[in-house]
Image 1: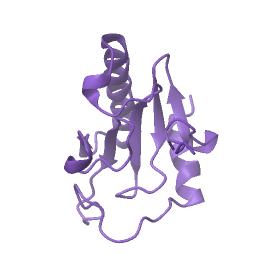
Image 2: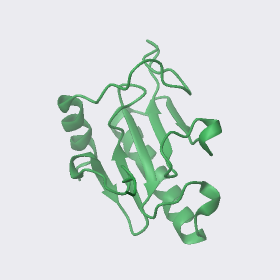
Image 3: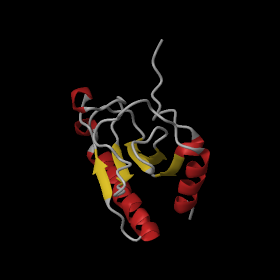
Length: 134
């Protein structure tokens, strides 16, 4: 039986935006209070597996997502990263960029998850969707 990729079979309620080759999704088990993922639609494991047009589309969507956050939150500090391979901490075998807002209160622990995965609250899901609804 083939394992289903959570990014390929993304829930509609987590999808914020999509382009021809890419998607922005809400991280269902975020490292911090506000975390998004920018991922190619095509299932590839590593950034080096992307075709040129997919990479350009992905980076432009990543930039646009950060610009949207900057507009809504008056340019907050943002962590942006990706893990290239399982040994580097990649837990989903589908390439993705992370975007997370940094808060001085220390709600974000990078780069590894501490403790159990905690699903995002429904209230936060709704609030994040409102930010990107336009």
